[in-house]
Length: 94
Ligand SMILES: [Zn+2]
Image (cartoon, rainbow, N blue to C red; front, side, top):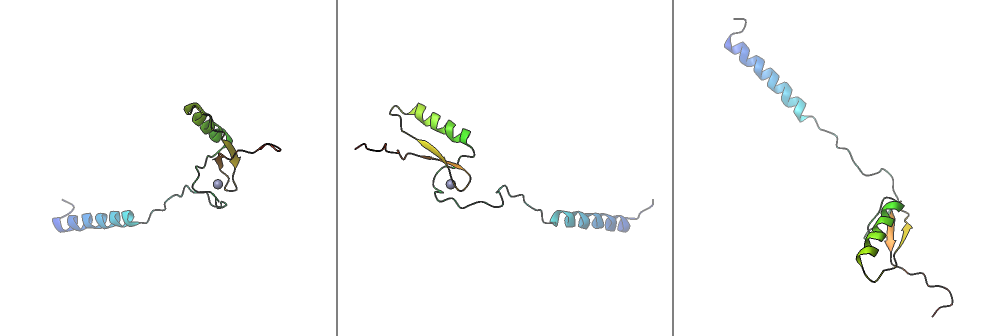
């Protein structure tokens, strides 16, 4: 036998401590948040990533409600698209 019991035990201990050290290494977590972005002035609003997404949302809402709410989409300074129910009044109407 190449190893006696004591040697064998030490051998296992060495491997164990190595494995622990490897597991103890701090792992970097990936952040999914984009690095730089303008602060959204209306964070309470739902942010849609694209015009297509916000348009889809408008169509979905318009399809659900009988009284068609006049929703408009606009691109925010935060880079996302938001919905707004603000109705632009035609000039001259009262
Ligand atoms: Zn915004």
